[in-house]
Structure formats: C-alpha cells, structure tokens
Image 1 (cartoon, helix red, strand yellow):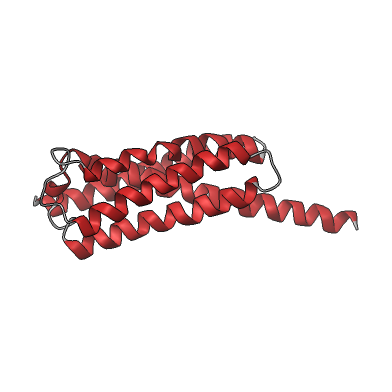
Image 2 (tube, rainbow, N blue to C red):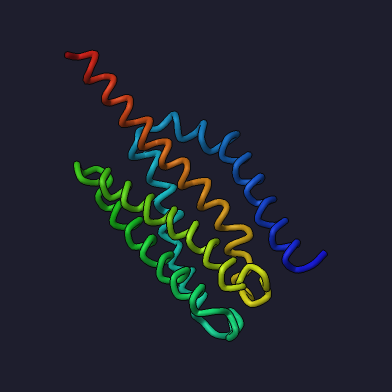
Length: 170
C-alpha cells in the first residue's frame, strides 16, 4: 500500500472505531447526565488540543510540511483549546451555553478546514511530512469530530427539550 492509502485507511478506520464507540458507550452514558455533566468531559478532551501547536515544531514534523497547512492547524487547535477551557469555566453560568456553541462551531470548522488545507497543500498526499504528528489526523481528529457531533446533539436536544417544557407550561 502507498503512504496515501495507508493514511486514508487509518482515518477511515478511526472514524469507524470512534463512531462505534460513541454510539455504543459514550452517547448512552452522556444521555443519563445533565447537560453540564455531559459536556464537561468532552470539553476537557478538547482542551488538550494545544498539542496541535506541535505542527509548528521542526523535528516533530518535517521542515517541508507546508506552513499553509501547519499554521492554521496549529493555531486553530490552540484557539479551540482556549475556548474549551473558557466554556468549562462558564458551563454553569447563563452564558456558558453560548461559549459551548462558539467552541463547537470553531473547533469543528477548524478540523474540517485542516483536512481541506491538508489536501490542498499536499500534507495529505505526503503524510510523512507530518512526522510524529501523523497520529493526530489519523487517530485523534476522527475522535474529535465524533465528539463535536455529540456536542451539537447535546446542545440541540437539550434546547429542544427546554422549549418543549416551556410550551407545555404555558
């Protein structure tokens, strides 16, 4: 197999793994929790996205890794980690929900843009350029995308539930 096929296969297999794990174990456990308690562990996971800054560290990645991919990937992850931490701090406050929405939109868009930019700049065509960071897009990013989908689902489901309860009360 070529490195590109191995890279693509790894990403697909990770999506299958994390989607199955989320459907079978994570989502059922989150449904039994309050909104705050369901969001907290996912936000903690995403707070670790500061690791994406390593896309800017020579020796961790190839010096030939296109900066047009590395910079937005690194800083997008770092920004998402900061917003996740702010959302954690605000979870129990009235405006915490707004920060969670911002976190989820920014974080999800960052990951989608990184895949797009990786393909556009050749970082996906030559996965060896990613060096030690190879495991971020092949293992971690699929998990992050799956958890972003879970957060969208939690936010939409919880808001719909609140709206339905308010309508019943009036």
